[in-house]
Image 1 (cartoon, rainbow, N blue to C red):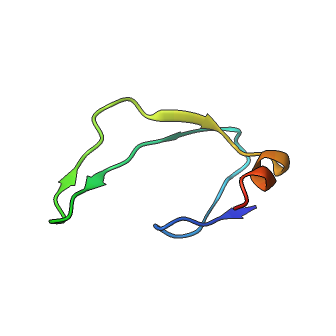
Image 2 (cartoon, rainbow, N blue to C red):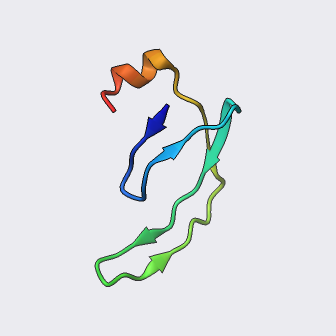
Length: 54
């Protein structure tokens, strides 16, 4: 199941658990790195994916 986002399309592998972190960019293109713990989430299912209208 492919998913799209502004950084490009991505696909989940066979795992069910994932972690994500972000870097933030302001209007002057200055990057601020993520300093907190990664956000943990589980892979969307067919049911939840359809309810989000991807």
